[in-house]
Figure 1 (cartoon, rainbow, N blue to C red):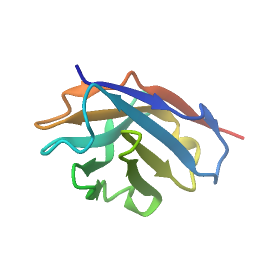
Figure 2 (figure 1 turned 120 degrees about the vertical axis):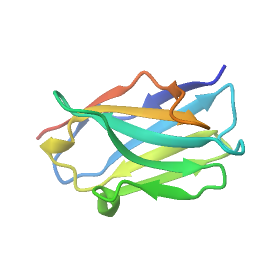
Figure 3 (figure 1 turned 180 degrees about the vertical axis):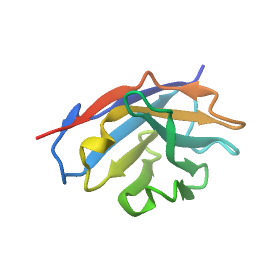
Figure 4 (figure 1 turned 30 degrees about the vertical axis):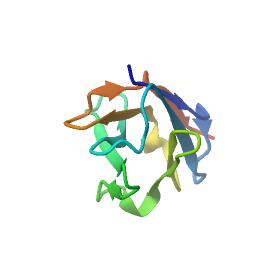
Length: 117
């Protein structure tokens, strides 16, 4: 059974870079046809897809966030990472990592990130 776990700071200051890591267990991030991604949900708003990385390492980004978002991976640790630069209070949200071959079938529990000075 594949499990995902997000990790990273819960509080980030405005203008800094947010960095979150998703550790995958029970499956490999290089498995063909599986895509791994990041989704966030600000308070009172709908979930927002931020970006993804596939088994070959190709990345995909939400156009509205592309200029500030970077997704990478460490295959030796079976982890993938989100970096969001120049954060502002509007980036406060619960951040989730997820994976699947047809839709997001597996999710992490989510981690609250607050942007505040």
